[in-house]
Length: 183
View 1: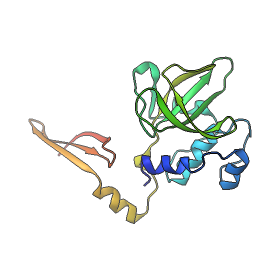
View 2: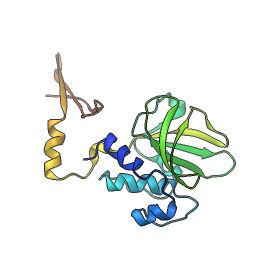
View 3: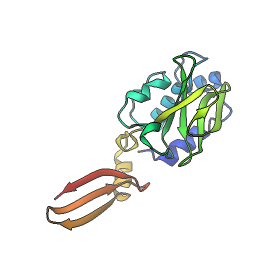
């Protein structure tokens, strides 16, 4: 299973690549004017994160793991940000590389290349920030050897109470992976 930091490190390896170089690296060929979502899909699939993503920056809004800006959600490293163009139905997307606002990014098709960026809560210029999608990193493809590593990096917190022993499962990044369950 790929961790958030492995995924972001992989994405950053493509800094400076244009559309043609990304296609040669294995990204699906689509519209050379609109490939930011293809970059996200390419990176996640190469790191073994199952997503079923298409080529639209707006697809994330309807996916499980979506957090709108209006909900008060604060971006986290590894999230995918979504901007919407105020003048037309298009938008932009990429990876969040820092926690909180303003957040830093690595994104495809930023000025025609893979580049780093930074955004505030409102977005930028003609682009309005809609929110963030948290990819299903814990539902990744993994080999049996990496499954062993994954299991050894889990932390289970137990609390005894009237309902029995409540447990919460945290992943290696310290993120709550499984809400309360009882034994």
